[in-house]
Each structure stands twice: as C-alpha cells, then as structure tokens.
Length: 192
View 1 (tube, rainbow, N blue to C red):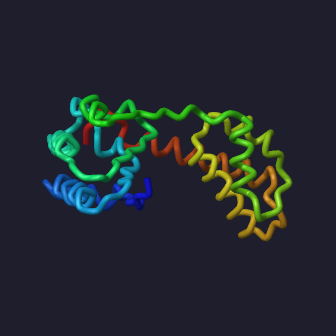
View 2 (cartoon, rainbow, N blue to C red):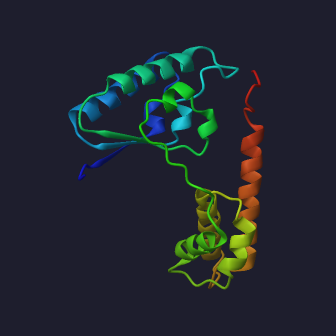
C-alpha cells in the first residue's frame, strides 16, 4: 500500500460553535473519500467519546452520531487509523466501526532506556539511561520524551555541557506537577 498520510488535527476538527465539529468531520471524511490516503485521527478519544458520559450537553452525542454515520457510509480507498491513550473513553459503537484494534503494551525497561538514549542523542549526557528507565517505566512514551526534551532544554539554557541527573530529576518533577495540575482541572463528572 502506498497511500500518502493525512493527519486530521483535533484542533482543526473541534469547534466551540454548535454543529461546526460535525461539519468539520464531514469535510475530512469527504476529503478522504475523494483523495485516497491513510487518514490519521490522533487523540481520537476526544471525538469518539462514550455518549453516556455525565456532563455532556448533547453536542458530543451529536458529534459521535455523525461520526458513526460517516464511518458507516465511507467509501473509497482510504484507510482510517485512530489513536488514543484512553481507549476506555471511546464509545463502544465507534469501536465496532473499526476492522482491527491494536493495543500497544507499556514499554519495557530496555525499551524506555532506548527511547531515552534516542531522545538525548546528539547532546552529551552523563546519566544512566537504564537507571532512568526504571524511574520512568510507568510513563507513556510521550511523557518520557517530554522529560528528555525538557532536560535537554534546561541543560542548553543553563549552559551545561551535558544532560545530568539534576536536569532529568527537575524535568521529571515538572512533568509530574503538570500532570497533577491537569488531572485536577475539569475532573470527569464535575459541573460548572
């Protein structure tokens, strides 16, 4: 298969205006029907949310209903790929529209160490990737990359000659603080 990839940005799809999100979805699916491609819907859980979730004011149910209809009616040579870090949030009816579901296990310690080494390559490092892999083993690959990039950025900005344990510890702590802050904002089920 030699189809070009087309990524549909969640920011480009969702809108605060009534009905716009559904119209944007329709335009993206129409594009994929007319232009054979691999259509990547990243962070899909934001679009395909379970319709029974509390706090929904009806717009998300309409978006999911539109999405279901669009997936059912889609014709052409395009392949739709959806990704999510939160599959439990995706409506069960949406799951049935996909022919295959591939679940990726958490990274092993050697894989985390390899990811750390890859992200820090090109800049001197005095850390032990395997030691840091044990500390970051519960993190997602994206979170591990954030820690590495933050440590790199801090090392460069402070004029350090290499990424050291202090930079990694500081970056890891900042990530934990950000995740805690995000988790406390807009808890599921809370109302305004």
